[in-house]
Amino acid sequence: MVVNKQAEVEELYKYNHLVGRVENRNTIIIPEFELECGETLYSVPVAYSAFGELNEAKDNCIVVCHAFSGNSDVSEWWGPLLGSGKAFDTDKFFVICCNVLGAPYGTASPLTLDKRTGKNYGPTFPLTSVRDDVRLHKRVIVDELGVKEIALVIGGSMGGMQALEWAFTYKDIVKTFVPMATSGRHSAWGISWGEMQRQAIYGDQNYNNGYYTMDKKPDHGLSTARIAGMLTYRSFESAHRKFGRKTQGRHLKRLNARETTSEGDKETTTKATNGTKTNSNPNTNPNDDRDAPTIYSAQGYLRYQGEKFVDRYDANCFLAISKKLDTHDLTYHHPKFNYLDGQEGTSDNTTFGAEDDEELDEEEMYKQVLASAQQPCMVVGIENDGIFSIKEQYELAKYIPNAKMELLSSTEGHDGFLLEVKQVSRMLKRFIRENLPKFNSDEDSDSSICSAESSMSYLMYSK
Ligand SMILES: CC(=O)SCCNC(=O)CCNC(=O)[C@H](O)C(C)(C)COP(=O)(O)OP(=O)(O)OC[C@H]1O[C@@H](n2cnc3c(N)ncnc32)[C@H](O)[C@@H]1OP(=O)(O)O
Ligand SMILES: N[C@@H](CCO)C(=O)O
Image 1: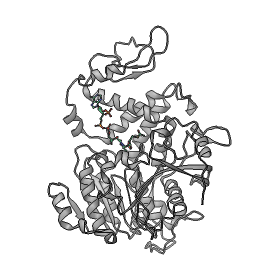
Image 2 (image 1 turned 45 degrees about the vertical axis):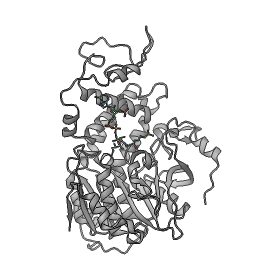
Image 3 (image 1 turned 135 degrees about the vertical axis):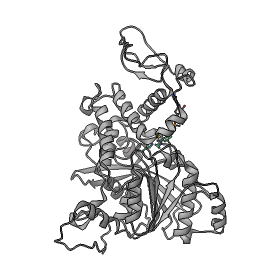
Image 4 (image 1 turned 180 degrees about the vertical axis):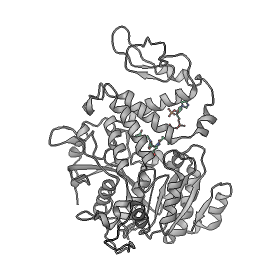
């Protein structure tokens, strides 16, 4: 059992200006952890947030996995799903979420102290995979906190990648799983958008190969990266509905109030009326509309989202998470890759249907891997998801033997899994009631869920 000293935790966080943003957080330090890339991390903090109580059998655990820029505090971003009588019913379940490697919210990342150098890792933080996160989180949840069975593992986007990795790596421990708006292997399209976002950071004049200082960060690059991300997280329809061809006005007052300027040759930090924070002297280029008095609302929104993100994220952390997504590929669970050799994981006797010497293409291996998880699964897809295509969701549901497909109806696009909480709640309650009967109580009757569903518009596909 790992025993943390508060002073050691604080020491590891001493260069992390963002970790304090997550209040509801605990930390366990794992002394040593070998990554898939071959590097070993020492004194690895893992931040987690837990709700509800672990029962005597230690089998009432729900693992919730967060998305790209999320943190372990589920109540911050899936609050309506969490609590007494909610989908993640804390009267029945012990709900836990761990922060991923590379994120700035408490688990080891570029902002963590590297004890070998006495500085934070910065750009030297090694490449981590989704699989690394799951193996590390298993150390915390199962080995340290004593959970014996995971009743449900769920997540959207990168959280969905983790949910899949959990289900395929720990088949004996994970009883059911719900991947949402995600993929079993990060697509060429996803990798491409990630590359675009990374290039925005690399191109920032303050980036300095990742060795930037906190008073001169690549904010513009990070903001641009987030703006590009937002375009994949939302949709044509939602932009049209919310902004249309409106010009900025509604937010003028608030943005003006945040404006700070200094004069003369000094560097200026301006949150201008159009929602743009610049780190340069006022521009004189007539083609540069950053300080223009009137811009379109859609522009203002994106600029604001970029600024908001810069306040709560770090560029090296962004790069670490972005590269992590690219590594995701369940195909590597195929025995042909001997992936689990020497690593933690549940070896199983799954028949993969191919002779050892048989030549298999990647598609076939991927399908065979998907076919190897027998646990009940609900794949949740969003039709107009701009980053994780609906086709990928149907593919997961088709080849995972005990999976059903649910469509989340949202005009928002990918972020629908975070925004459409009522629908998500209904789907989850039903899935839990049908697949985890030992946790049912009288209140979970068909009629209570069905009446709540009567106004719901989602389709269901099952094999
Ligand atoms: C520790 C932390 O802080 S982590 C924060 C939690 N985040 C996570 O866990 C990651 C997952 N969450 C997310 O990605 C997001 O929070 C989401 C998807 C759930 C919701 O996104 P939001 O940005 O809150 O919602 P939305 O897209 O509606 O944008 C609303 C904001 O844009 C502003 N806005 C709307 N239109 C405009 C416009 N035309 N011009 C400028 N600003 C605008 C709104 O005033 C609002 O501002 P606020 O965030 O200061 O209240
Ligand atoms: N809005 C989500 C999108 C990624 O799924 C996030 O920032 O984490």
